[in-house]
Length: 77
Image (tube, rainbow, N blue to C red; front, side, top):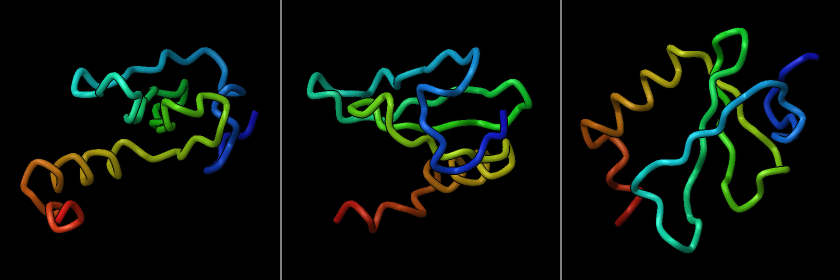
């Protein structure tokens, strides 16, 4: 199976989705899963059959590093 951005999340084989402990009771969160080839898929927890975005480990590292250092804080104001 070819994995691409926008692939239906429920069609990804053999993945365990993880939800953040920071998610709220309304289900407003994202879930992530490591794919067999090492890439990371991200989906909206409210739409588990919907599209998944697929990133390389380096892309996820860069995003997490930016989130930790406040690079995206302006999006929340």
